[in-house]
Length: 446
Image (cartoon, rainbow, N blue to C red):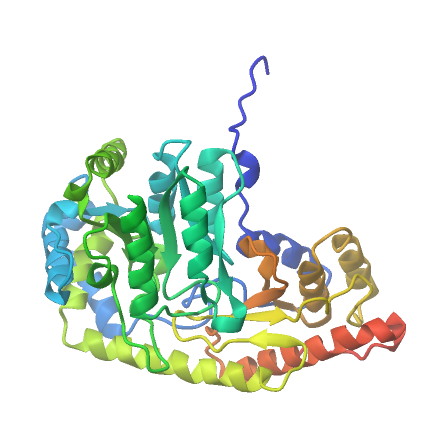
């Protein structure tokens, strides 16, 4: 074309969690049965919202207003309900005007970063959740700026790294955190969160907290919301129902804007997000209308507690599977429904393999691994040999090598097989560097 029409940040739009599906489908087409451990969709893995939640949603179909547009920021009585819940927790207070609904948090993330000044950067964690890191990098046209999560300290944020990067890079206007974290499953203690808030306060910047998993916390950790620890710092909490009901297909997420009036520039920025939302008219109405009915139901707290107990048990299963594995660093998750396995530094090489029975699959995998990161090489061999699809850790804007799996498989026997196969595959893959590929033992596919 006579003009370059490509956005400067287009090359930064990467989402390994779904991009790995293309490779998996190619291998599946050659006859390998696949086990998808890459996507955080509880429904796809066999879970469903309880009958009483489904009944509430079904009843809303008979409400005329559930088929209509709602106000730009969302259904008013729903926003009032959510604002009251925030205020009941104590800490920063909000009104219904501080709630903004979006068509899922993916929509919210794109808008939040898309309407920042291009020169304003948001410092995010590494490993990073791809939706945030890609959107932040794309808005600026440069690589995402990150602080380290420490695998030797439970994947907690390196506070000195945050302080130094904020202090010496005046383009940083905000700090992003995820607690519970995706991909690591870490839950940050209050003192860590308050220290991050202190850094933001000292440097006159804002905070974004992705709290989509805020009500999936276990292993003795209590739930803690941004409004309770942020103090007077301007901030944005991102919430939704996709992981809680669970109802990912609803595409219903919202922002809770905290301390908007504390800073004029921050207030004008939030106004720009609302103005952008007006161009879309409104967000999806029916899922919003379900929120007060579901969350005020006396069964909701028991529902959340039962799911937390379920994921706590599964987290213990994963910890048991990797306990004593000399090749990896593993931290048992305390929230969300993911876990991260990190290979010890220097362990992966470009001559390691897993035996693949199907010669077509073997040839395809060998083609796929040309020039890729060492952990991605392992992930591709794992797909070819066992059909298990996990996400390489380097796909999360991370220099460590490893992979992310989920706690979502509902079939107990299959979940046990997945964990046993992952452990055996790690051992076989590392050992294969000392042998010819033909001598590597086969990892059974089922």
